[in-house]
Amino acid sequence: MKSKPIYVEIEIEDEVEKVWTYSQDPGLHEQWDVRFSSITYNEKPPGEEVQTFTYSTKVLPGLEVSGWGESKGTHEKESGEKTSALHFGTDQIISPIAEGKGYWKYIPHEKGTTFLTQYDYDVRFGAAGKLFDRMFRPLMGWGTALSFDVLKRWIETGERPGTQYRRFFSFYAICLLFSFVWLYQGLVPKVLTQHPLEVSMLMQLSPFTQAQAETAVLWVGLAEMLFACFWLVPGLQKSLLKLQVVIFPLLTLSAVLSAPSVATAPFNVITLNVTLGVLSIIGLLLAHQLPTAKSCKRKRGKKA
Image 1: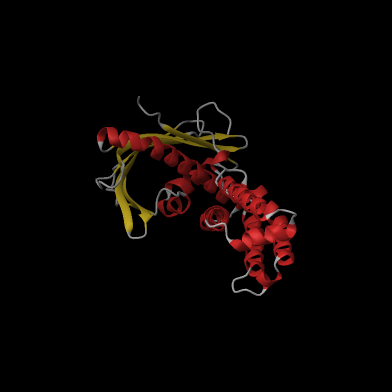
Image 2 (image 1 turned 45 degrees about the vertical axis):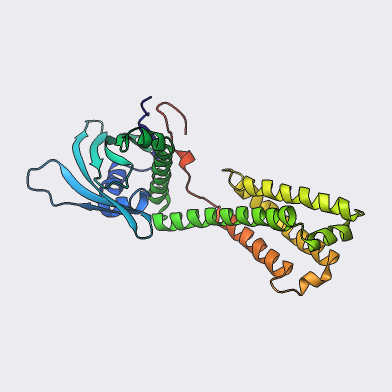
């Protein structure tokens, strides 16, 4: 089955000319579009309508994909609506994209500009490439939508893309860290090793016998592993951060009451939980006005 083209649309409360400038000027474009690390226009001969350019994308440290592009067929209607056609591709075999085409459209209205794009591309490696594209194409659509929201916030609020992306990636790095912490704390000391200190602290805080405490520690570990998975669910992270601001002081107090010696041990529960609690507060601060792909329409006629 042929894959559907990627479609992204967003409303920007500003004039068409400003949106056009921020998206057509390569020095501005490369700042907000997460899909590109750099965009360089080639010198255009007098009278030539096609603007060629080269682009690069940093995949990993030391690994970069470079490609070529053509911006052509720019058209403007009497209503002020503008359209720019694109042709792009790369010869690098590490890129799943071989060659593609699409367009950008700018539609003025009373409240600002409707900025939209639609593009499609051919993949490499035959059936294997098409299978991989089932995962890669949604990622490209998400990256396009996220970039459009960053552009919208830059134009409407003046917050530069670099600041937005630092906040965005810092927030989700914290979320991944908490997912790892809860997974490790549930899996290693509770499920795999049944650490004696975990069992003894629970016995101090409850009427459980040794066997009952060991069973309870196992279930607590499984619950913590499930909690780790919740950190990977979009939309839950902010609520989880708020919850942690409350529970970390309670967990610290219960640990010290059940086993006072843990307060003086190296890398103890107090320093760990205070650090994680403060990190939760930092995460909440970063969560304010995060750029999001959800602000965009992903299908024609659909609401954002």
